[in-house]
Image (cartoon, rainbow, N blue to C red; front, side, top):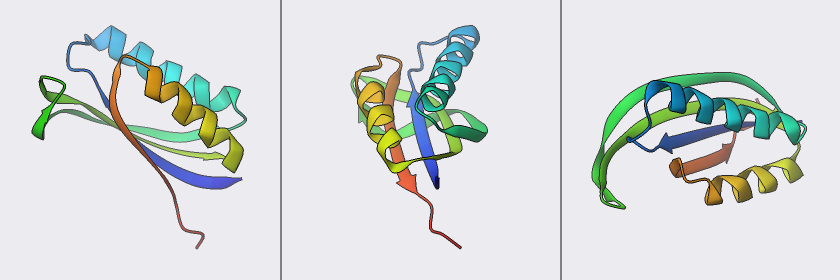
Length: 96
């Protein structure tokens, strides 16, 4: 398994309960594809440097997880079509 870090920006229209549900769905998505979430760090609502889809802010969450390289393709595919996710960035951590 490889180590990955993913930053997600969720829509600012979500209330606290909907945000928690969206984060849990993302964790379940990783788990269902053979990965394991090590931690999910909520950064809270932050202002964007520029406007994205008529939004000026969003909820930032950073997740560290381990998965096989093939599982990340499915995770990215689902995140692209998930309405709550404004943007995401998935990077593989270097082996130390």
